Image (cartoon, rainbow, N blue to C red; front, top):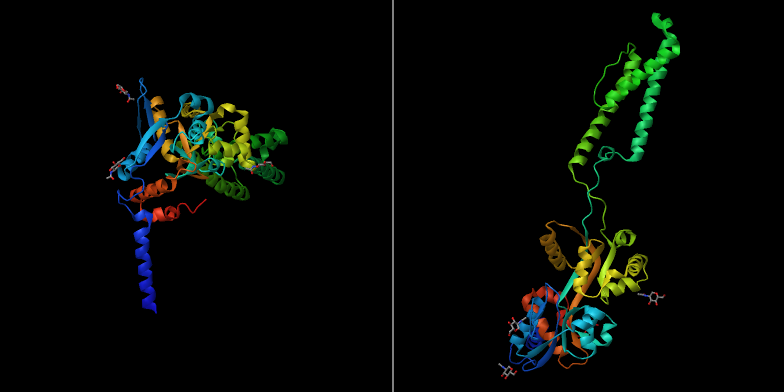
Length: 407
Ligand SMILES: *[C@@H]1O[C@H](CO)[C@@H](O)[C@H](O)[C@H]1NC(C)=O
Ligand SMILES: *[C@@H]1O[C@H](CO)[C@@H](O)[C@H](O)[C@H]1NC(C)=O
Ligand SMILES: *[C@@H]1O[C@H](CO)[C@@H](O)[C@H](O)[C@H]1NC(C)=O
């Protein structure tokens, strides 16, 4: 019985291997052989660089067009590139202009890396994801905190308050004990001054003594009574610990450069008075923030609405916004490195801070013309390419093999 089951399992696996699309690598029997695609072209460095010449010719290079070049060679299909209309891009924004190519059925495949949404699914289809990446914020580097108040920083304000009260209490304790001694054991010289004058001189001495101990100067005090010595001694012990604690903390806090607090999450951005999020018009990010109902996202969206410049039409305007240091920009790490690199070359300094991950992860897909008969096949073939480029386990984990069954 068990043997029988094992045999059946092997048969199923063999059949699966024969017919599973991700394992049929043959360039001949691939279904795309001889097909023709109209493919969109976009300028979005560093992933895709579209250089247009004066006589209408252009070159299209980068990692995204490379996928098309590689697949065309491997699966023997032909293609023509259709650059997105630059006038439309300037007017409606590069995202909408790119989507319009699909809506107007001017292209079969859009290399504008598109995040699938239900709304977009009304007029287009999506390939297997080209990338699935999580986002971080790129924000202007916070300024250094002033060192003017450095000496105050080791203790919190309430601690300073308590210390002040305790110093006054010690002074009062010293004075009261001195007053008691003079009442019980008057010195022969006492008649030379009035009792109050003498006490005020003593208070002055005690204050000097306390101040010099706190500043680590170590001034002596004339105290003939043992009980007074014990009182002063106990206080000295506490003061030594405190003073050493303070100077140690002060030393380390002055050596370390301390930066002002900055944005590290969506909540920080929602609460921020200085920074607004910047995002491409009609992008999923901009739409999400502008239409959000949750408190945090709504606050970010409202700030963007108050500052219409934060929603940019073209990537060039986006760069302008980001480099103006007035905005927080949510994006993937590879794009951030590219931007920071450009800025570093231009200004010679690192002006940005990259935050922790924010809870946004988006898949990017090729857009496919709605209803095109090659869509399913193109996606499956791209899946093959993806599987060869990446670890097979990762590919299964991402659900590539179940492509087409997912919404
Ligand atoms: C590749 O496609 C072309 C038509 O575009 C066809 O003539 C050629 O035979 C195909 N090559 C192979 C190896 O099938
Ligand atoms: C366009 O063609 C001209 C001449 O044929 C050539 O010199 C130029 O480099 C080309 N431009 C691009 C962007 O390919
Ligand atoms: C937010 O609320 C409005 C009105 O209540 C609703 O029309 C809209 O669909 C909601 N948006 C989201 C993203 O839930």
